[in-house]
Image (tube, rainbow, N blue to C red):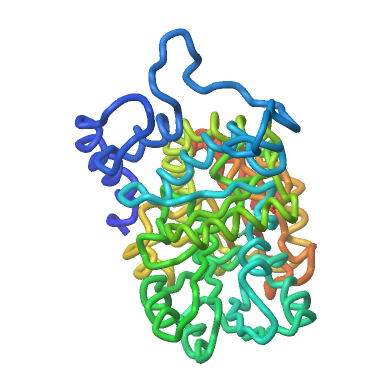
Length: 403
Ligand SMILES: *Cc1c(COP(=O)(O)O)cnc(C)c1O
């Protein structure tokens, strides 16, 4: 118990030591602390009389005399605002080794670029049974193109048994919304031995919570709509990878499919990265506080959060994650109880998505498609004061029980 509660604080102290040797300006290197890196990532050097982060470049086309050589030719191919954001995310996902990042208009655009873009007729794809619903729904599309899709749960590394002859292993850890965790390193090694590529959906963890490329993945893929940008006002996605050829093929997919982010969204995302560490640290400690409070409550069962020492995911999560995310899930007695609870929340808004600075919660079963109980609630903890969050949640539980 004590170990979990202190984890975020330990991380912060550790980072403070690193921060002392941090460089400034013009991107960050591997020796820099994570908080410093988040603030400076992808920003150009300290050129006099220029802004710290240049504003969004709105361009459908660029002045392009003569032979069309790069870097900026046409607005669907490249944009300087994307370039800075891509550098920033690359530094966070892979601080110690060069990586390329390709940003997309949404998480699903990024996911499709790998799941549809890297797979051909006859290929075998291994998906988790419990991953993000829209990712799973690409199964039908893959099969219609003549690929074989095999599925197994995230928990217990069950996907490992399906790797024979596979082309692509898709991992989501922690899984959304069930918060199960698998051993990414072990699965990646097994997949590579079987000749498969490995992609990890890193949405829930963010690059400050987990670095899939360091754990052996070929692709770290994520929705930037959630905690990465963190304000509930931007849709974005990205693919990060170290192999230049894979990166080029993802980039080519974006160009031909046209799933490009707007310059304004890209700039907002980059601006939001500066506070990433502050937000995810606060969310992580708030999430543990909420999970602890819920565990003692008579109406609440199956409280899940990977940062909780008692959680079935915790041991593996602690080995590969540095922060455990903003999501706490739990089950209330039935659908009616859960609906009364959500309606009684004052601070927390009933909304889908997660990772925002504000608390949000929803009864996941209202969408159908996830294997969850009718009273299952996915709660995303914001950066509000912990005592206000606890008061809101415990008060709503009392109201729901008394009604
Ligand atoms: C939200 C989410 C996505 C999809 O991202 P969008 O930005 O909504 O397209 C993919 N994976 C996970 C785990 C998510 O939570």
